Picture 1 (cartoon, helix red, strand yellow):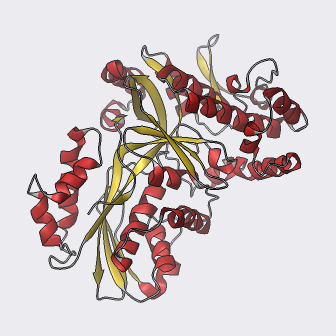
Picture 2: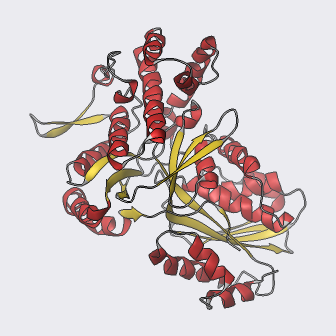
Picture 3: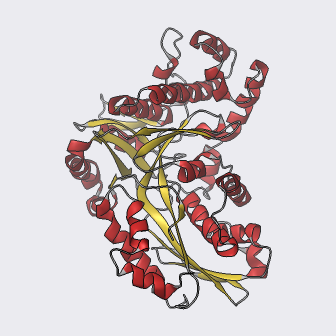
Amino acid sequence: MLNKSHLLSQLNDSQSPLIASIKAQYSNQEVVAGKIARIKNILKHPKLNPDKETIITRCPGRISLSKHADYINNDLLYTLGDRDIYLATQKISENKLILINLSEDFGNCELALEKLDQVDKSSWAFYPATLYQKLIQSNQGMILVYSSDLPAAGGLSSSHALMLSTAIAILSNAQHQTPNTQYLIPLCQEVENARGFSSGLGDQSAQLLCKKDHFAFIKLFPEPIVEYRSIPDDLAIISAPSFINADKSLPEFQAANDNIKAYKRINELSHQYDCQFLGDLLYKFTEAELFKILETIEDRSLRGLALYGLAEGARVKELKQHLDTKSLGKHLNLSHQAERNYYYDTKTQSWQAMSRDEQLAYKFNSQEPISSHSGIYLASTIANDQLQYSANNIVGVYGSSISGAGLGGNNTIICDRNKVEVIKQQLIEGFYRERGLEQEALAKVHISSSSAAAGRVI
């Protein structure tokens, strides 16, 4: 058993098991000092008892290079970034769940165990409170102290990072064993659904199944299968904020993600071809046959969404066979093309909202590969579209797209590793400075390095 005092002592010993465990999480050792400082800050919190067993868990944010794929059983393509949530937890004698978040803009709270079902669904505390209810049958109180450098509502799945770090901590504290991955994946979906958001299974799968220095190709059904590919040496990933929060609790977010409901209809259409999901069609039919299937969908909006799903899946399927930086960049550009709601008019030199006719005028050409198509998803904002346009005009950028489920957050930029610092500076001087966001961007435009999957640190 390691108590708080033991852990603090290990943090001051560069050869200790705890320091070795922290170092093992990251491919870029330059980030380790900041992580150690954050853990020290957590452990020094006066509410944590120096003599009680203390468990530390973490979960990184994911970088998604395949969007919305879990709803239709496409291959998912993910890697994990080096920003994460750390959590220290202890059992307490009080009949309470004490939640302390040391990150900016988060309130702390002490919740009576019998009132956990009364927590506001828009509060971050809803996640740990709901997990605690689902996982603990006794009246055992706990204290959970969090610290995060992972931006909330940034399209990097901070909500699942919060859930997984919490669930692993609660179960490890209660059962003294690492919980089963197959148990945690649907658990996160249950909690998101309880909050009122139709969640898939992709993000939490990535955060549990990815590994450091690799891209992970994950196929979820009928059972998760993971294939890994080394991240190319010449590739760098930049997460660039739009400074619009992709907040799932907002009514606009809920309304704009009716695509998720539409995917259920498309999956049902797949049943007539003896497939459970749209993505399964890619493994059963030729491209000529796929185009004929798409032509049977009369609603152009629904057809555009189905084309988007198949095109995303076809490109990721190709990347699984041959992954290189330029191909990945091209994939992101086509992916964002489907998301766009705005375009730059070169005649007026101004940004214009796309009309409905323009949105539905997507390419549909059976003489060209499905992977060269975009289809439509339409979940971007003007800031994300402008950011994507600006990034793609910088030498050394191969491609970029809005991250996550859309409507704000970050853009993911794939670029030449040898030029990454110059590209970041040009983004700041070009895109952000003219919007008065230079200082904020200096702190928040992030060059990502790789990290290990979610789990118990020690």
